[in-house]
Structures are given as C-alpha cells and as structure tokens.
Image 1 (tube, helix red, strand yellow):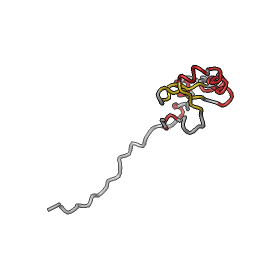
Image 2 (tube, rainbow, N blue to C red; image 1 turned 60 degrees about the horizontal axis):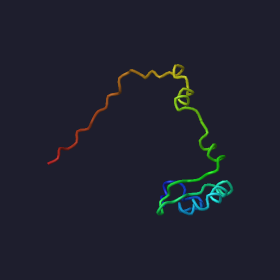
Image 3 (tube, one colour; image 1 turned 120 degrees about the vertical axis):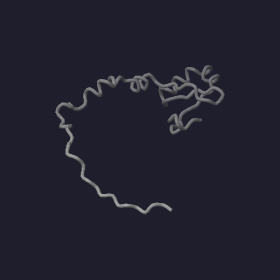
Image 4 (cartoon, one colour; image 1 turned 45 degrees about the vertical axis):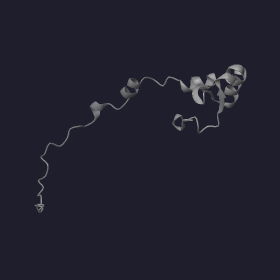
Length: 99
C-alpha cells in the first residue's frame, strides 16, 4: 500500500479486480453509499470507484490558472521603485592569517 496516495488514511473497502467484476453492482452501490472503493490487481491499487456526485465535486472547474493570476493586484498601482542611494561603507577587521 502506498501511504503517499492519501487513500490509506481513509477506511476504504478494497476489491480484488476479479471480485470487483463479479460483484460490480455491489461495488457501485457501496461507492454511492460508503464512499470511494479501491480496486487492486496483484495487491497494487489500480483504480478507485467513486459516486458521480463526488466526481463532479472533485472535477469542478475552478477557472484557469492564468485567470487566477490575472485577478491579482494591479501592479501598476504599487510603488516598486527601490532606493538608489549607495550602500553604507563597512570596515572589515583584519583576521589573522593561517600558519
């Protein structure tokens, strides 16, 4: 099981692929009633069955990334000029030379 996939923290029913094929109607009913159902092949997760409502919620279009960036602050209104005066002079202390 892969902990990084985020599915292991949930109490999710796991189905071997052969069992999922034989009991497909039950798999669908449980996905609607209980939440995501994981299908495995040789012990490895290969698919997740979810209810259509959950699918639509997860795939809801939140807008394009470029639209998000364009909705940011108006950079023309910001004063982004930096102070051009020279930096202060710093006196460095002579350190002893290694022998």
